[in-house]
Image (tube, rainbow over all chains, first blue to last red):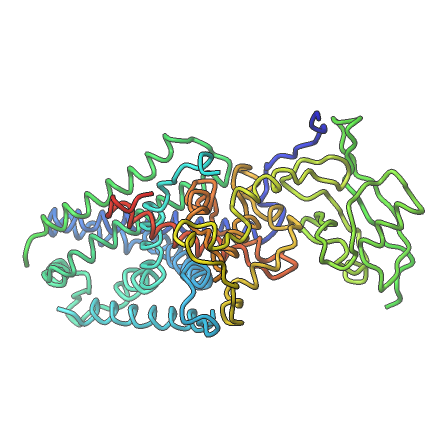
Length: 131
Length: 124
Length: 253
């Protein structure tokens, strides 16, 4: 049997089809900001090794208006990332609990946010009051 | 049915991506809040800041803190590299092997640099 | 608000005799508040334009035949009421990502080829080597054991999830949401002994690893199957096996 003639449509601009696709791309794009922040931390670490003068330049840079604006973008990205990461978390981990008595998604969400709050407070406490 | 399928090496990169993503979800908002808001706002009476050179070296005197810092930078880099690679694919950039190597290569380089630098950190 | 007399339905049409020219055609269809979109299509076919081609069968959202893009979103046309689409216009296209045969009719062959590839059937114990000696026993299952796969077993193969998945559109070799959900459905069944046979398909790039958790498959599923969950839980399982096989070389299949 010869295959039927068909019409194959392309994928150009597929994200225009549904707002859900644009939300997905926004979620994925947070990685650019997170990567930039990782590079900023790496540069800071390098300056710390290089000495007090270099460190001061790095500190000046991240506290400059441009540096603060960049960090505002990173903060927004980090929040979008955290919200989407925890929302999707129940989909990625194996079912917890026993058959018939599986842990509900809501409990996983609550646990994740509680862990986040705990880690965040611990980190901030150490950064502000440590040493 | 098995001849058609070759095992993917994606799990290796996905696990690093996932570890970085979990770390970012847990603490990144707080960390950025610290460097971007708390540090510029909080100045001591003598003008001393939370990110003064000797204070930061003091915080990093503990070996655990050094491991955590290098590990965090590395994992965030792997997370970003993996997602950026897939984002390029989603947006129609199919650079194949070259793009894959440059994404994951950059993450590996960042990891190496981070590990090397924490070893070189002077003691307070 | 008074009900409108008619509702405007625009259909993206394509005919193999004029392959270069898909076209939009508009129909003014009599409006009834209790009519479904599928009934409107049937009215067009019966009274307005007999050449319009579309699939349908059960009219009650269980056969999975009448899927199409409605205002850019994959839907079963029998599952939508005209009153929820009024005042229109309603734009209908064939399901995205599939080759079009004519008008709203798409070619599902790719999916039909993928179904056996994921081992979407129960493998009884007798067919495995370990159980060859034992006499066949009835396969009993508790309600709690059934609850673990029941949701995935609701799939009606309507293919809305494939049209919702940009990764399938970008990489047609991807096994896709419904097939991988059915893989998880059979893996999770306490009566099944075929997990090992499904590993290769799961662990391949075209298996769970082409998924980037866009998640739209789950949002459009008319049966609440949640393919996104089925696939991404299998990513965790696939990654776990990858690490163990790497660390314990004797374990590698």
